[in-house]
Amino acid sequence: MAPFPLPVQDILGQGGQYILYLLIGIAFGAVLEVSGFGNSKLLAAQFYFKDLTVLKVMFTAIVVAMVLIFLTTALGILDFNLVWVNPTYLMPGIVGGLIMGVGFIVGGFCPGTSLVAAATFKLDGLFFALGAFFGIFLFGETVGFFESFWHSTYLGRFTLDELFGVDMGVVVFGVVLMALFMFWGGEQLERIIGKKDLKAAPKWRYGAAGGLALLGAVVMFIGMPTTEDKWAKIATEKETQLSERAVQIHPAELLGLIYNDRLNVRLLDVRSESDYNAFHILDAERLPPDTILQKVADYQTAPANTVFVVMSNDEAAATEAWKTLTAESVPNVYILEGGVNNWLATFAAEEYNPSTALPDAGDDHLRYAFPVALGARNAAAKPNPETFAALEYTSKVQLKSKRGATGGGCG
Image 1: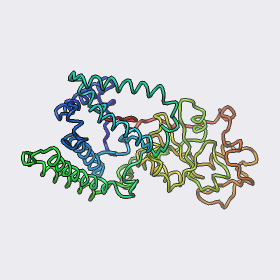
Image 2: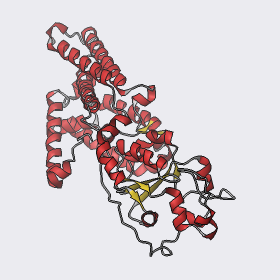
Image 3: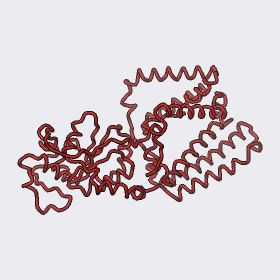
Image 4: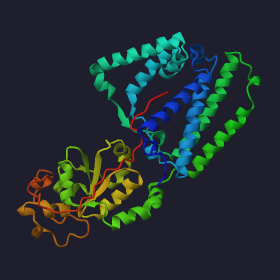
């Protein structure tokens, strides 16, 4: 598996990670101050096209970070699934951006740069930062009045490759070209409106631009690793787990997990719609195999106490789904041992006992005949654990956190 993101807390401990974060924050603030981001006049000048330093510095940081993230992802060094990406709430994001833009023009700062200015005891930065905190307070006190809008148009972890339906490498190269065009356009605006002499600008910027474009082209050429590529890297280890039956959990263990209030158990049923409608475990969500990749982002942002249990009629389809989820770095994924057929054999009422099994059902087919499609409206859909307390099994579920950070913000 890709070794990054690094488990900072595991390496440095809880106290050590906070020291590292403090040092990174200080370094980030120092870079902003050196770049002139503590000067409200310089920041506001970009909106009048007189000085585009802010645009050039921020876009340089964003584009360089983007290229390095996806270059390391393409090379198998970084697991992008574990990198936090802010979820998209389209309309609230647009409205919030407009409000922030107006505040930026009027006050000359964004929240992050106001703190940089406040750190150097600039009065305008101090007042802006205090205003930002007061605005946060007002928002917290009034969000209840427009909460439905605040949570509207949710698109989840939505990235440009999904929007355009292309490989992320193509997006990376396109964004690099767009940024370089904006740099060139910004310089022309500075020359025309700001009366800047471009001859005085450093020549090395052309080499830097060319190098950035070259790296973007390399990312596009390599492309992002597919699920099959990711599985190939971990196949030896994970196939051993499958053969040793380390991830196939007994129905009785799953029943105990369902009734465990400290766990968030998500049951993923990959069977056909007809089998699912005939019978499924209570609260099991149907997951067609061709939609698994679309759900990965949702599963990645689930609470850390989440256990995913994949099931099919026997184990074949569930095992393939387990491989996909595991390759995509979804943590705590298990397979229902023997599938739904084994669940029914263990917990079914008398009318659905094994004697009614269909002998010619075949591999990974439902081996029980249901006269009516009751779905989860069946006693066996959620048995009483006290009734089956005497069942013996080997416990296999161990919670492991492989998620990245579950929050983010802007500088």
